[in-house]
Length: 167
Image (cartoon, rainbow, N blue to C red):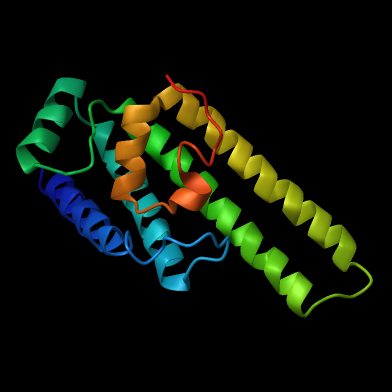
């Protein structure tokens, strides 16, 4: 139980830091600050560790502990942790590919740059498409709550920006 509480505290701290970025990331820009990307990676690690810890608990006991802790991020069952993990991995992959694309365009344009650029663009497009698929299965209300807790830029990750139909 001590490990679970520590992991919930760590996750809550990362969510709090991410909430501070909500006002900073309003513009449409595929390049996000390195500090924000690092926070997303910390969130990913925290969710992954929490998911591993959750396997030692029965569903009801785990949810009871999370509810008792009062985590702002909605965790209604243990399976939602894998959904959150998958979503955040797609976001990180997209931003890392976008950062590399910008680096190639800005300075490293050599003979193989066109091939690398095409591969990275495909990687970014695939990450966003997979993200959209998972988000659509999650549903609009749950996704909007998730995205607000992670301060995902609405210009890239908003329901309307993803062009998802209303559910």
